Image 1: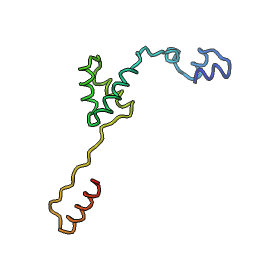
Image 2: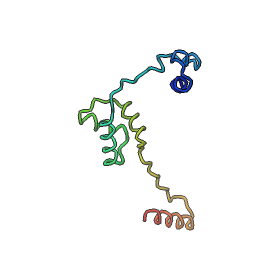
Image 3: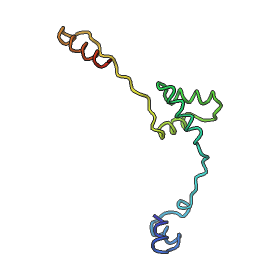
Image 4: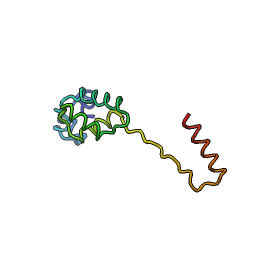
Length: 114
């Protein structure tokens, strides 16, 4: 917003920050976090090869490979990549069903497995 005001109206950064009521330090802030591209790529590779592994097990694998990374960063990157553990559907119990309900349930489960 501040950059827009400076460019559009030709006002100083200090004046634009005063109008928007934002600290100049906030506008000038540059993140110093190093790039996580290699770690993100390895995370994607591990998640693709081990589909049933969640972020906790992948974190263990990354630590074994020598990456100095904590579980919170692995969780954040796992979430940013859009990865998630596929939820298994529970098998329905066929107990306490009448014979007709049992037969219908059996056919439904059989058709889902094909």
